[in-house]
Amino acid sequence: MLQVKNLHKSYTVGKQHYEVLKGVSLSVEKGEFVAVMGPSGSGKTTLLNCISCYIPFQSGEILLGGTALAALDENALARVRNTKLGFVFQDFMLIDGLTVRDNIMLPRIISGNTGGDMEQIADRLCELFGIDHIKHKYPAEISGGEKQRTAVARALINHPLVILADEPTGNLDSKSSRAVIQSFEQARRELGATIFMVTHDSFSASYCDRVILMKDGVVYRELRNVGDRSAFQDHLLAAIKEMSRE
Ligand SMILES: Nc1ncnc2c1ncn2[C@@H]1O[C@H](COP(=O)(O)OP(=O)(O)OP(=O)(O)O)[C@@H](O)[C@H]1O
Image (cartoon, rainbow, N blue to C red):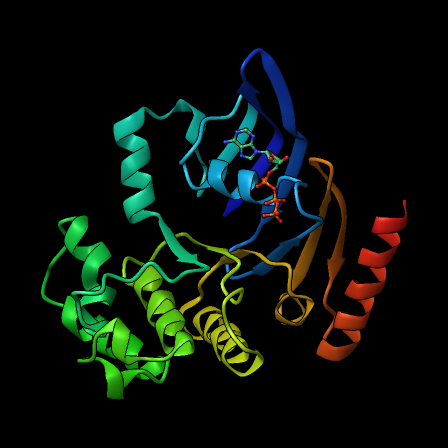
């Protein structure tokens, strides 16, 4: 569903070039829930921004559902962003003046796809994520966990190929974090969603099928979850500790 091949990205500040991604290769299968972890500055957000079509990259390839992003012009990239990707951000990014239900429908409205089933799908997502009772409220009237579950529903309304989540539990307490991660699990299980998440939180990452560890702009190691969440979290913490010693 998502393939990144030998991706290089550098930033230019004044006359200096800083190489941030130094040949990143990874792939995410349909229906997989994958996390990226790594120290601050290792290039996680830069990688996510390249996949999100927000920033250009120098070389390498990103294939989304078989389409090479580098070959697309600005208009085509904007279409990919609106129709093929779903986004969940650390600070929710909900529109204050819209209700929960209207926030969820917004990507459909933006992409001009306001066909007959839009409202039913929004209502179904509200039920699925336990936010049906607050769907007529405004963001200021709901909790952080409810805001993020609204954002997960919004990310799914267009049936995206991949949901990209940047620190989705970064502003939440552990109970709300758990509810949000369970929303992702549910989206994967019941809707076949594919999720690619950047996180610093080993608890959230321990719910994933696979965790990719990044260090200094390259993939350092990948770890696969074989079933026991708590054992996987311990395994992750040990691998992160080992990575920081090297
Ligand atoms: N627009 C930019 N211009 C110049 N340098 C940048 C820019 N954005 C990021 N960087 C640099 O690129 C490096 C990687 O940044 P990035 O945000 O991708 O790391 P990260 O792994 O997501 O870090 P964190 O965990 O702290 O969010 C950092 O050294 C950062 O200072």
